[in-house]
Image (cartoon, rainbow, N blue to C red):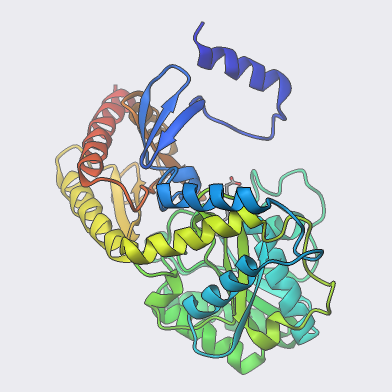
Length: 431
Ligand code: PLZ
């Protein structure tokens, strides 16, 4: 019995079944590499689900956290505030899209940022409805799962969802929903089922993460901006997965030129320390009364120190530019692989910056999803030392999330592993 099998058995016996895991038990990690309980080395193309954009244990982040630990690790910002939080708010106010006056609140998780953005929108508008999109992922809290556009496993068995949450189709040409159709649906929604004057917010990921790395057409984001302006609706950009240099710009919305009213951030914001933020129009962020938003751990000092270092590293190591370069290499290689005979299973290759994915299909005519092949590729890659994550509402997308700090030689190594994993999985499935 290996140490990993022993840990797996203990996990099954002691940890909630709903907390799904795979079999790689981490012992140590450094930049783009991770070692497991058997001493096996992996290239980490999950990056803690888009968290370690700056790699595992970036020395500048480690140093910032160690220095903060010498001063204090927790006071609760509501009890004894500290400058680091304020300075981070100033930096995020400047970094997010839009030149209007902005303010920030810090919390701990992505779901919490989404919850607070909606609370602000409700307080500001005096309305309660929220529109989100099919395939969206906005978290696992009661409101987060309600906004999420996928039933199993996120909402199944969890009872009634909060009222006045409406899902509109996400424009996805590959899945047969054009931008015009998605807009038409929104208009019909306002005409037939929900009064736009009851809608506090529209929330959208610029690139859907869990939903399958679907890129919102920039024209669609501009149209949403116009719809929100027309009806007094708050536009919330959920940048939890796409933000923090991942797409080649600081934020996914930056590509479209649209300034949302509120931006939610988490994951890459603090390089592995739990921190999230809501930044946006000062008057909206300020709508809740004092005491109406906050939390015990919100804006934890260690996480805040890490986040300052993350922002420094993104700027100094030019990680937006690097994300672009990584993305070009990945997409070129994937296109090459997809063009090979026998690789007709690759139905689509898409991405923005270093947020890339391939969608696996049974054939290119029907584009029917091939979830079994997708799972097989992930398993074959893992056996060869590459951690990949699948995603997509149809379980047939493989996403590539390398740290933006990955050495180029390791990027090539990982892409070679991916290619051989694809070959092996295709062979196995067709055998
Ligand atoms: N918004 C866009 O991607 C988290 C979920 C992993 P939390 N995505 C990873 C899982 O299976 O739970 C996410 C996201 C977007 C919100 C969230 C929620 O962020 O930090 O997990 O709460």
